[in-house]
Amino acid sequence: IRRPPRSTRKESSAASDVYKRQWWNFRPIRFPFNCNPCNTYINYKITPFAMKNILLLGATGSIGDSVLSVINQNSDKLNLYGIALNSNSAKAIRIANEHKPDFIYIEDVDAISAIKDEHITKSKILNGKDDLKELLNNINVDVIISAISGFAGLETTLMAAKTGKTILLGNKESIVVAGEIILPIAKEFQTTIIPIDLSLIHISEPTRPLYISYAVFCL
Image (cartoon, one colour):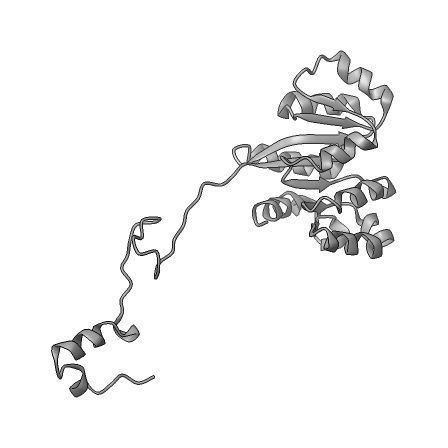
């Protein structure tokens, strides 16, 4: 787009005023961040990063270790809201003492008594599929990380796909075996699934924590 001839710009004061408002003569006014009185040309908006609550399924496995290291490095932004595990009560106690999650779901009934003997009073102990379903659908949970290895995580992934939340999926069997079932359900419930399994995203073990950090903070 060519500018009008110079002779037509300053024929009168009115024409000059019109010219001053043309887009090619407009220069953006630099306001401080979040202080634009017009809220038109510049729309910078800085909001504090909201703390994200993480529900970690399979907290005692290798992927769980990577997730916990990410949470430790970003404790001001990430909160371990709940964990789920099968029977490794000793490791669950260490995680509970360090991160103090609000909920601990345990699949093995015998492991419940071992954890209760340690007098972890802050964390609520859950057991049974109804408790797990309620925990997955907890309104305070922002991100579900499925780190359960093998086919044991298939049912839990299917339940998580119906929550409408964001899932970081570290269980490749869920996609390989039941992807045709889980993915349409996730689409129906507007659930976002991001793979973090090494074989699905072709990354090495040392870079997994970095990838998890990227996935969590770029949601």
